[in-house]
Image (cartoon, rainbow, N blue to C red; front, top):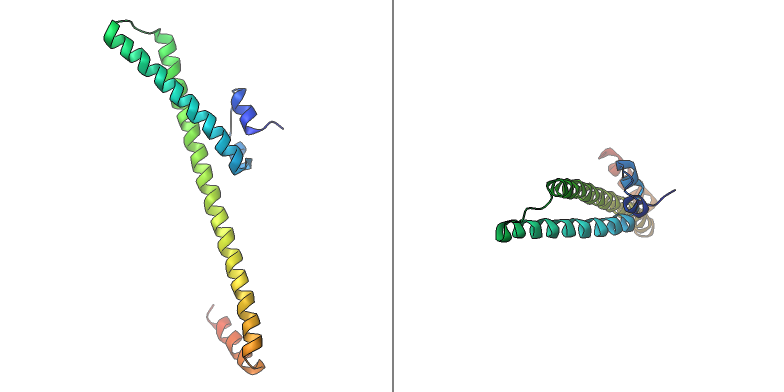
Amino acid sequence: MTTLIEKYRKAIMITDEDLKAASRDELLEVKGFLDGDILKITTDLQVAGVKRRTEGVYSDPIWYQKATFAKRIKGMLSQRIQTELGRKKRLNAEVNRNENESRLSTRLMQAMTIVLTPEQKKIVIETANSLR
């Protein structure tokens, strides 16, 4: 199976499934290359604009169109990667929150066993179950 960075370098289409399957580090690596490419294209387009304004030399219209299109497509991929990074961060936060709640529940049960009598513990559990 090819990695995300290999797909990007070989100009193979990157799907949403590829993004979901990639690790955070892979996404960040590809995003780094992608943003670097966008910056280079932007710089090249700006240089072409300056030459047109200062020297009256127009760039090749086909090159200009391809560069503009590539910048737009790469920008959309960069945004999709950023969205996936945010989704992974939210999922990770939810997993951590659930683990913390589970640990708290375990500690509370242990504390109830130590501090309360069996009858008091039963009353607390029944009360907690009635709150659901």
